[in-house]
Length: 231
Length: 183
Image 1 (cartoon, rainbow over the protein chains, first blue to last red):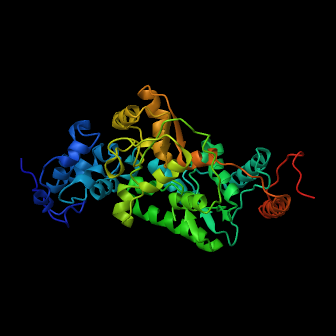
Image 2: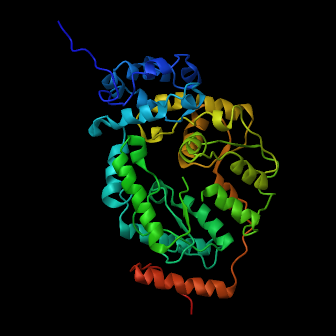
Image 3: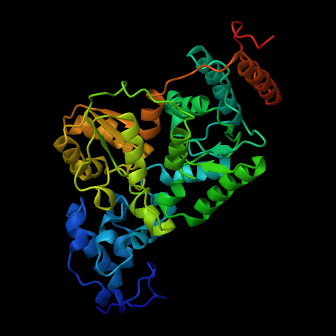
């Protein structure tokens, strides 16, 4: 039984790994030594780099390792040869078939593209929540507080982590209290206010770019000087 | 500008006042998220480590770092979207290093300036590794220690008028008879 030889090279490699990596990486294992999930599924960053350098792209892409890895970058920071392990892992994530991306990451990314936030919170619900909670804040000892929405000329515009309005709305009050105390001229967008870019995690560069574009568009629309992403 | 710089600006300019009694005598520690550290350094050429420590220092009288820290800090275990992924066992296993670090300094308060890290530390690591402490977002720590001076009547009236105009513009109606817009 004959098998096609694996071709190596930047053009052939999905992970755009140069075969020189096989030499650049000293196989010292510093990356593996510093990674808390070394050994999970028999893999570690050093082995992942070898896989990529040896043309085992699909094996790495279809393994769980690039997803069990949290892209924390400790391995890369410690690498004496500057091997770009993070970019490689994230590229491997990006090559996963979209319907095989683990968990809600891909669905959330698509939801954000369609509805402006990862959890699909509707426009009316968002505004009602802000109005209702503004009133709550007043009752809790912050007289005059309200959430300024799409406020022209605001100095600070802030994004929101959708998990807060969805599940932990009171946690939004921490920043609100700070803004109140500082008498900040601030605002939140009525649309496309999501601050969590799941495209980053899923390796989906196009969605990530679009989300960044929306965040900037909102900031420019009101003429904000400061864009705050409290992530 | 990022969250650290904005909070530092408010504190330095005296725009917010802090009650240092609030967390007095409680051992606090800080967690460096990968995104403000290693990744920020790589992408923007600047990591944020000292900024958080300066802020915590303004609020807490007792705190110490874990080891290792800053650029060598351990990830909470839930980064890169792992909090939302189905690999719970691996995520908890990953977090053992962070849990050990927290246990080593006998922290009563853990400060995390990241949603993801905070959730992993507060909702998972504490339970899985049988630890007792309170977890705060960095901005939550500041918010909870603020000395709030209510706005003047004039300021409140102005805000009420703005709020009323805004909610009307967006067509938001609160069906609450108790709440009355300003006269």
